[in-house]
Amino acid sequence: VIFTTPQHLSDYWHMFEGIIPSVVATASRDGTPNVNYISQVFFVDEQHVALSNQFMSKTVANVMENPRVQAIVIDPFAGRQGILDLAFERAETSGPKFEQFAARITAITAHRGMEKVMRLKSADIYRVINFTIQDSGRIDGALPAPPSRKNLLADAAKLSLELARESNLDSAIDLVLNRLATSFGMRHAMVLLTDAEREMLTTIASRGYDQQGTGAEVPWGQGVIGMAAAKACTMRFANVGRHFLLANSIDTSQYLNTDLSRIIPLPGLENPQSLIAAPLLANGEVQGVIYAESPEWLAFTPFDEQAFSLIAAQLAGIVAVAETSREPEVASAKPARSAKAVRASGKEIFVRHYAFDDSLFINNDYVIKGVPGRILWRMLQIHNAEGRTEFTNRELRLDAALKLPEFKDNLETRLLLLSRRLAEKQFAITITRHGRGRVSLSVAGKPILTDVAS
Amino acid sequence: MISGLDSKVVDMINAHPLIIIGSCDRALVPAASRAFGARVKDGGKALEVLVSHVLSQQTIANIQDTRRIAATFVQPETYESYQFKGRLTSCDEPDEDDWKLSAEYCQTISHRLGAIGAPANVVYLICISRNVMRVRFDIEEAYVQTPGKISGQRL
Image (cartoon, rainbow over all chains, first blue to last red; front, side, top):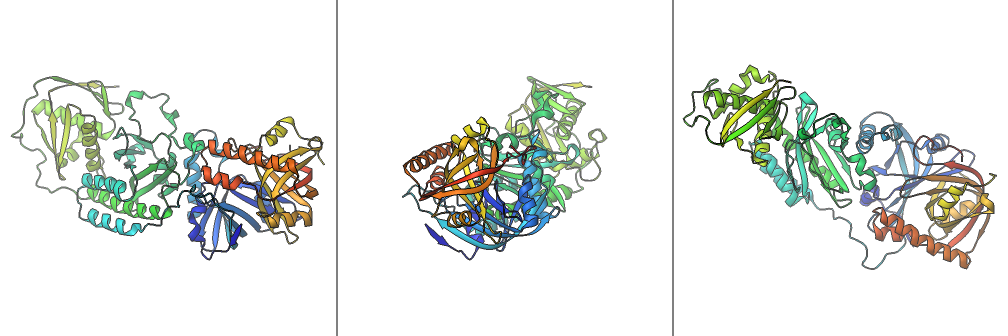
């Protein structure tokens, strides 16, 4: 057994990822010891670590009497033990560290009954008095190598420059998802955009799944994705484990009284171990979330998290610009009938619109609900009445039937969502966006429209 | 002293759960370590735990000096946990039965941890026993430590 005392705690970052539970020992004033497992010791800085205080009542009581603590953290690659001699400094019940811990706990205990049990009382900060590595031997050739500290800054900078040249949100999202897979090893990822009106995050694109799931929704504040949005903070889990799979899944109880034909399943791996979700934060608002997952534990390192957050911030800027920069005024509010305009003909396409949630079905297949459903319904009404196939964003904005808010209508992202959903499911009706400002409707047949009032 | 342990708890200990040991020195500086096997003794009034004196020098020294010890047993699959606190009655070199128990413990806990997805190689290294001592103590306090409402309740 070899004992070493490293200079830098951060060199052993992989011991603070919670892959294997940590042990914490305390002692009361009268010298009675107490020993407990905790899920994770968090790295704070070179001199400090943090413990999340959820249900360690005796540990906390002891620390109030005697601030000394010893914790054991495990190297998940080499099986070495890190022995931390600690002194309690303070308990934070608000602030960034507390919020981060609380969000993590809430995200992974979303299933019923666990939230109260797992409720965070405080984020407890400890000063590191001594850190010793205890290396008790290895099995020849049996251990996986720890992840390298790859310089992700170069890849992030390259992508950042590419994104800076990109003015089209559609292409920017594809670029990010493609680069995450090729340069960052994040092969299963998705981008979701905020639907503030319905307090939802809607999947706009994904990579690495059998179904793209365009239009799939996550309620604001629910699960890892929802919490990343609600708390506007990046969340990373290195070992979700099978015990947390239920907790991590979206609570489907909200759908108990809902027609399941109106639900688009969220893409997802069957058994993810590593998760990362970063808010798309721009102009002080969460524009959406970018999420990645992996079947491997510790697939995403703290360095990946930094690069991921940078990419998220840049993509957020593009989302915000797409929504705030309006198209040129040259577009007519009431454009003349397009040269391409044709009267509907050919095979009948049955389109049903349900007014209560603006859900839309094409030949009995669910398309989408909410504002995108309302937009397509309106375009089809105009198409059937006037034979038009060309529309402008401006006329859509001015159309009272669409009931778009005057400020921040998110029209651009809603059209993008609609066009991707229609293309993914290969419906007989599609829309194509021409830069910002024009939209073409393509109908391979004769739409028969039915409006269901309630 | 407690009157004895419930058969459910005895069965849990005999099934080789995770075992961690707590101690502290006279200056109240705590030490944590793992144990590599345990037995229920004296009709549930005492416990024997196998502690490595190579990996856990400070723990052994503390226990021999203060005679105070805490041992927590955790079912890795369910987090069902119990903590026992007491006073050392003996600390001895291992005999053949101890080595046998330690080997059986390491094999079983490796399998149990591996079955719930813990990295197998690391599990083996954590569970491999080295130069254990047999530490026996009388149980003075027993607590449920399973996370939740009953955590901290006396058994």
